[in-house]
Length: 214
Image 1 (spheres, rainbow, N blue to C red):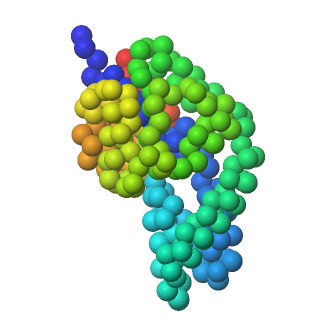
Image 2: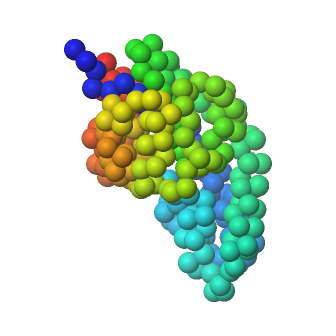
């Protein structure tokens, strides 16, 4: 019997590894530097959102109008802080559960890809020991629209050469699940997205994928 899916496309942050705290600390330092209030609640609105769109959310509390050039400068400043924090990451930040599940999915014949809005995807994958593991990577370096737009997942499917309806997306953000559906794909969700019932499959742990994908 033909398998329902031929490929799995994973969001990176919050699915393969966790860099939320580093994002928060970097945005907080940037916001504090310009005197704009920022906390964990606001940070939660940035999940799955591009860097510039995240900055716009933070600047909702800014009293002055900033030029596009100044916004680019602030976004670059945040990224510099973030990359310094990311340098602390190592293969220890990749859990055995995730690595063993990925290996098993590959052994079962599935193509594996990353679909992330982060421009730091290659750097993060290198830090956690998976620089060349995935069959395709679609990330912030090759897309122009953020989730819930489906561009990042549609491009990942195209890079794999597999029809979107044959790809399962794994996400932890509601916007990511919406992007998968907008791209004609089903979504298996973890974390916030699972709690919100946003997926076609709402999982308690990463290894639950092995029950979905025979």
